[in-house]
Length: 391
Length: 93
Image 1: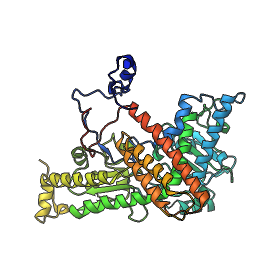
Image 2: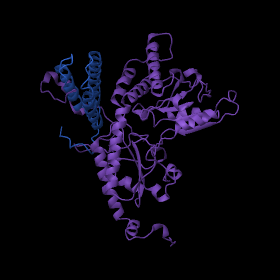
Image 3: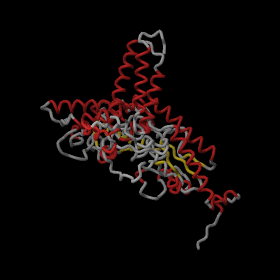
Image 4: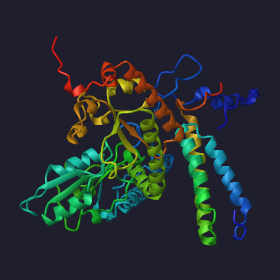
């Protein structure tokens, strides 16, 4: 499609179509000026829950199922159903392959939240009378720390406990094998691996059998574990995203590590009193959480409006309380309030990293200039020795 | 390009150029940069592959990628794309 306006009157109908004014409208209001407003760059891709990009290759596999192949994958009696079912089963296998599972162990859900709820809700008492469940996040979404899943899995096995992990942030970024990790239940989210929103999966181990009670009952789809028609286009998208994640894992990981180092080194070399939260070794490099002492987190976020960042995580962004994660790892209250999370992913560019680092350095300096606490620190006052009086 | 390989360099190079050309027309900044980068790195990585079967497989994959990029570029051109702050100023339409 070229943006060309043809002068030939006989073809004016065609030229109308080709003019840019006929671009499909978005929900954003059109600005009055000719130039549209510049949008912030995305530094939230990996870790955040509301802005990750969808890989164009994923959309490419999904579109035929939105445009053409409308069959219900559960209809057994006609070709439309068969082709839809085939696509769904192919997607199931793609998800299973990424985590070293059998396709029969994958249940499609509406997302990791539903998967988590299904796992935790109730486990069948008759199989193991003294059931209890351990549930751990594989990679923390706020500080990027990898939990020792393998060790926990080993312990759970030896004590006959069920082990569930929410692997939404980890899938496709670090290699995961459910047998290796001795995981019984695993939640997977589509949009965290550059796939579509609104779809996820739950891995349910078959050997030894893990029985769970379904959250929703109905037509008995997904082996009775999750009734409801599987959304074929979304499932296909999830499968494609998983396959891509497996192919690109090494390349992405190497690149993300380099970019993450670049960001952290740049910031830390120019600005003093910056703390990186989370274990420096056991972490996923693309999720960086930095605390800038003597700077309030929300103010820094507002100052960095050119970059779509967050302090804490999106699921707690509505509350102003400091992150429960940071408090749990023993960060000082004031440092917890001044933390910012940077997410680096497959589509992050060097320019974006440099831009973010520069802006960050600039704004931290500016905010510190205005901070009386900073002034006191410069003069050598120990802040912890101050007795704050009430007025 | 390794001149001892069984597949001549010209079609490979032409495919490479077409991939880059197509990738350059992705309206969204992040997809454009990713496509260009990924294509370059993929070709660079497989520069010294000699086995003809493997080469054929790679070239088929490259052709498929070209088709995907062409389709996705068309779709993105149909919908409005937001310019991000790191991009150079857009030319007036």
